[in-house]
Image 1 (spheres, rainbow, N blue to C red):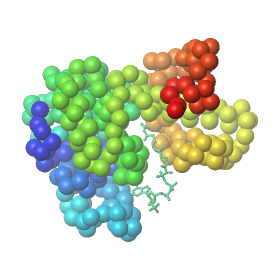
Image 2 (cartoon, helix red, strand yellow):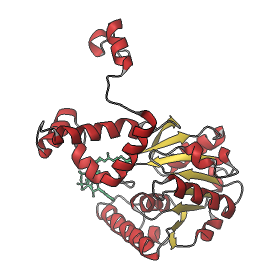
Image 3 (cartoon, rainbow, N blue to C red):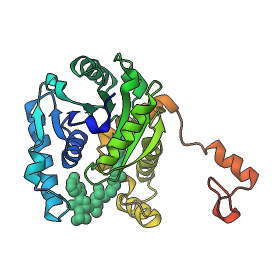
Image 4 (cartoon, rainbow, N blue to C red):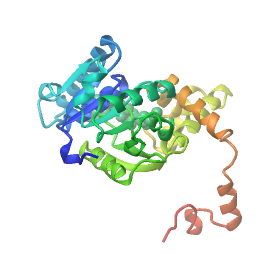
Amino acid sequence: MRELSDIDVVGVVGAGTMGNGIAQVAATAGYEVVMRDIEREYVERGLGSIDDSLDRLASKGALDEDPGAIRDRIAGTTDLDDLATADLVVEAAVEEMDVKRDVFADLDDVTDDDVVLATNTSTLSITTIASATDRASDVIGLHFMNPVPVMDGVEVVVGERTADPVVEFAHAFAADLGKETWEADDKPGFVTNRILMPWINEGVRAFDEGVADKADIDRGMKLGTNVPMGPLELADHIGLDVVLDASETLHAELGDRYKPAYLVKRKVEAGDLGKKTGRGFYEYG
Ligand code: CAA
């Protein structure tokens, strides 16, 4: 495995919302980036989004460099073989297991043997993706949040066979991009989407069942719980297709997520009611 200090070129597979965001933050951190998508049109659109985003950041003085200099470090391509020079690859193709497995099998061939292959999958199994390669120990989840240039966090997802040094490397790389990390096991939805998707779906159901109108559901959750977006506007922001794909994966893997969690019942029976009793899921002085 290559050390972080050996990483010069980051390959990104996919120039869509997530792929172009990842390419942008990697280039902003000083890496050379090769961003690949299957059609020239998708590559150009991704590069255009990067231009817009860099201009927004530059206009408020949030960049240390001229946007043009950052942009010059990003090369777009439709040829996966161009990732042969990559010291690390982050895949952000469509959320379809067959596609991801094909991409990883190809990346396994195209890249040097000691190159870490990361996937930005939001819900699919890292272990299943990794099994398409002969280097499962070098495969890891690096789950960026949308919009990538603005969000502070990256979820590091550890597959069944992911090697410990690769996990450390993933945290260090994300930190180098200016992101904070948390770690999740390779269980459906990891931390974020396992919790976020039922929240969004419940917001959608509340609307559908006439609890409140759309705007009041979003206002209620924003004003009532201090989140930046309510469930319906967040669903729109993420993309309803992404929400549906993620929800279907979680549903298939986890079944009915809407019963009260047994641990809530168990803690209530134990009298651990949260802050007011000094103990719930956390302890309070
Ligand atoms: N590039 C550069 N800057 C951007 C940007 C982009 N792509 N998108 C937004 N910004 C900047 C804006 O320029 C603005 O900057 P200033 O405050 O300095 O003016 C700032 O971000 C806020 O943007 P807006 O004023 O347009 O709107 P906002 O205040 O509502 O913020 C938001 C937008 C940052 C997206 C905020 O609403 C937010 O944090 N929403 C929640 C997003 C979220 O939860 N993302 C995770 C989704 S889940 C996921 O991604 C995982 C998955 O697998 C599905």
